[in-house]
Length: 219
Ligand SMILES: Nc1ncnc2c1ncn2[C@@H]1O[C@H](COP(=O)(O)OP(=O)(O)O)[C@@H](O)[C@H]1O
Ligand SMILES: [Mg+2]
Image (cartoon, rainbow, N blue to C red; front, side):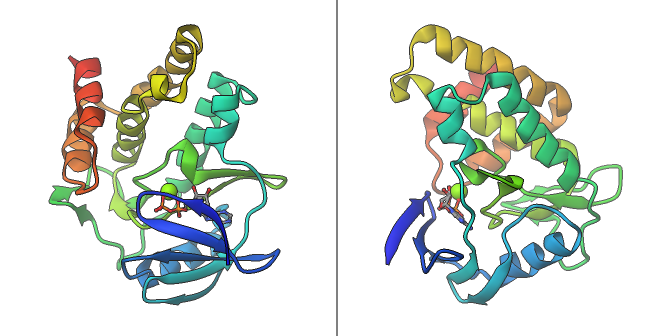
């Protein structure tokens, strides 16, 4: 099988031109159930064909990730922010189904308003730019709760990326940061940002330097 993608938690193999297998070490049935609901609501998530244990067979999306395009300079920083905020905005219109958990890693996600679907890992590696527009993958962390928390988690993830490790020149790093981070931060709330740091810190795979960068930025 041809490996076409990998993240911290799974590997994605092409099965044919239209389908991929995502293999991970955790159960994917809840994730598949949510993805099916999102499709019915018209949200751009891949179509699910089968989910058994850690194996999820889904629609193969064709196109680069937003991360690749952003790092290559083919998508401008402001446009990166537009895509991320646009996906948040569309997702958060969807009422959370009663079976979606509203607490995760010991953090209560409920807020004042109605519980909405939250992705909780909405960053450029999980966005695939297809001919039919941006699509969002990797629903393993999704939960029910307040939209501001989802935006805050995206901010913590992005602020935590060590862009210098990608070999980008300092002025590109500065324009990426100033073009994307403030927009996400403004869309969240200060309380949600503090909670999002707690939530990310509770991730067993987290790199502490990500948290340090977020804390420095908030200080
Ligand atoms: N349906 C898909 N079609 C094409 N590529 C995909 C698809 N789902 C995931 N990928 C690719 O595989 C990578 C890893 O998948 P992802 O679900 O994000 O796993 P992880 O939890 O390990 O981050 C993604 O960043 C993306 O590049
Ligand atoms: Mg991912």
